[in-house]
Length: 75
Image (cartoon, rainbow, N blue to C red; front, side):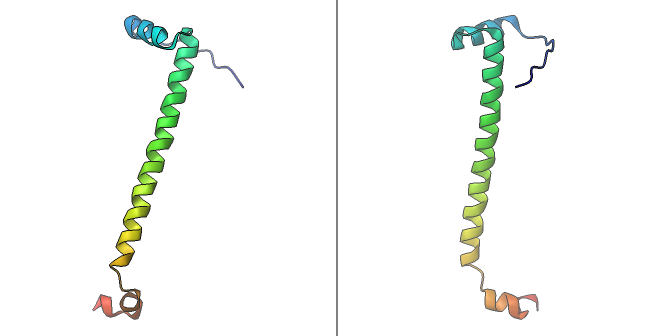
């Protein structure tokens, strides 16, 4: 694992509350926060995909493929 050194400005009270909540160092707290954001993003994307899959599955029930493929639907 590579390490990226950077300087960021943090709200001191917020950082202190976060460190207290995790019981770790500021570095480990920031890393944990980044991991949580990544996990949440993946969860949100999976949820969106699940909703889309359900929608498409239910939409397919209302489509008559024979009519659609025959061109009757386009008249």
